[in-house]
Image 1 (cartoon, one colour):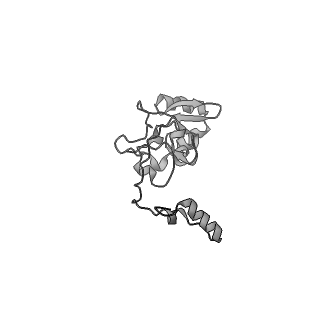
Image 2 (cartoon, helix red, strand yellow):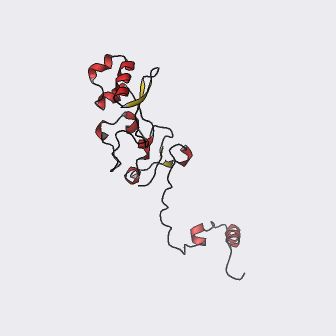
Image 3 (cartoon, one colour):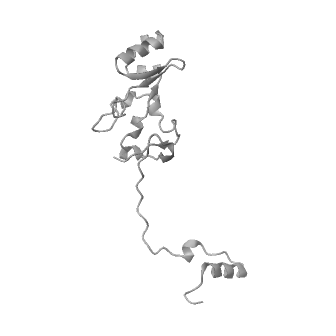
Length: 164
């Protein structure tokens, strides 16, 4: 056996003696330094298979891609966002939707489910996303859809990460 024992001979020897086989690390010690952390690829918001597993701190490195997704809100969200006051809650949702559409705040209203879809800018960004900082301008009052992302959404536990 020129060049030393192979993995097969090590396993054969240990089996014959009844000892445990050596681990891969013991058989093949690391000769190179560990690899650098591989940067995440940019996700396509329209292709869920490109989304990355969410981890803490990811948002700080992201270009706010989630803020380009449609945001569906309910009346409680609109009240928190100060677009509707508490007294308007009693009005028909369709009337509220007409006013908000006229004001340019919502782009769609589903009357069966009473869900409003917030308007997005021409580039797809949320109306409340700051163009320079890429941060939400109403973060403390943001809707539940945003608060619960990525726990709840098109692909729970994943986000459409794109590096800044």
